[in-house]
Length: 454
Image (tube, rainbow, N blue to C red; front, side, top):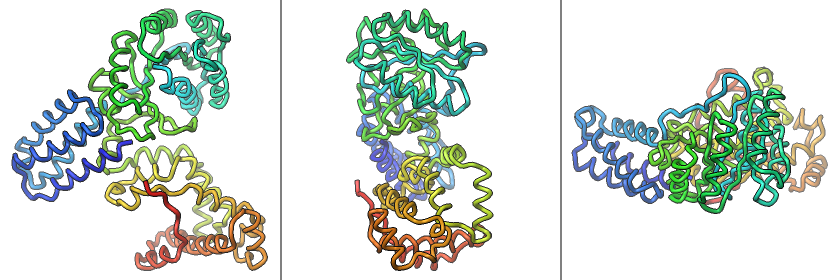
């Protein structure tokens, strides 16, 4: 989402860093570029004006202009102010001290609210919480069925009474059941509308009064740009929401909504939906997002993703296998599956520091179909062949190619690549860093991955 803004800001700050000393005219020129970058990203005009004014005041301070490395100081200030614009270090949901934590979800129709309810349920489920969903959207066709289906995928209980009952009564009944059944969390899915109207707000107010939720969340579609900010302002006045769930952050929007909503409404973004899968839903960390926009990576989020998908015992076993040269194609397949669970490889690369400067990687999407092909080739092998790739000769290679729907040269390339990778991993497992020149030669021999240019 923030690619265009990220490119502009990194280019501007790179120019600032290249100067040994900064003058007021240098700061003015940088502020002008930052202002244009934010406006092009569809950030609210008033927010841009306030942001750049504060930025300029700090950058013109004596601690910047008179420092030994003023460029680095400016980058530090931009990072801090950008994080502050989106909410600082982030905020937590209010959890109930006793009984179920009640979360009331609101938003316009089409914002992804029902899907966000299921994703939030899955998020709590990973924390071993017993979650229930209340189907109170009785107006949109198939909304109840959608919540039942997605709630099942999330491992949550769904309380529903069809489409004939009153939403306020459904919410009240669901809360009573959640208390009786000692659920940890109750998420109430309310009705959306195509636009702000009094009927929607009145119904929300009634449900809120009857259920007394611990948190009221507004689901906002990031793709709607400045309209999303207008929606947030209207809901802030009528529904008094506590935080925002930003959906479709993986889309092609320019990021204006995400950068504006906190400054305009005073309400933080608490969660972000970053894909179509039910697990593509995370806490929103403004400080980490600011670092990613400025090309500094997001190592903390990468570590958290890895920890949530990697079994500690399996990792120890893998290390021993690498040390003793027992790493097989079966192990390689399992590791590849674990990495893919962490999300698209392009997203993982974006979390690595310095990737913003590597244009070739940043502007290319690794074709996930290449990984599908690799997986198909390995699955077409016998257990003995996966354990010892040296068995894979002539007729075996043809059989594997036919079984995986690929060509013999694809099988040849995979076996060769695996042999080279095993040598590299064994040396690293034993604490030896590979010779860079040999590594370059090895990578040149490896089959090229297909990439799709954006």
